Image (cartoon, rainbow, N blue to C red; front, side):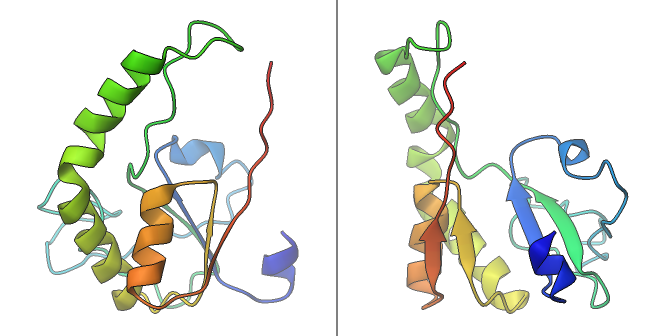
Length: 142
């Protein structure tokens, strides 16, 4: 809200449900891109390369999975092997394609800073595009 109050455009890129961020109805959707599909859907199936931000939007949510988090038995117990398998399947084996698609999206939308909740792929894409990046997070344990 502080960034929006200062007239900065903010795009939340998330694997979480967009409704988590849209409760006060200040978002605008992505416009239709060359793919002919709306709201960030692309032909590639990863949601990264085809969408273009609506020029008037100040806040938007883009749904794409760049990380998978950990598999947990409970709030304090991480299933290490299951977490690594999940990461390998969802992210690592597709890393090059995901990274290239994210770079295309960053460039197409003229993103000038990436703030990440400790998502390595987002930071790698920012670095590849020479865009400043920072990591912010809240490690909360239930």
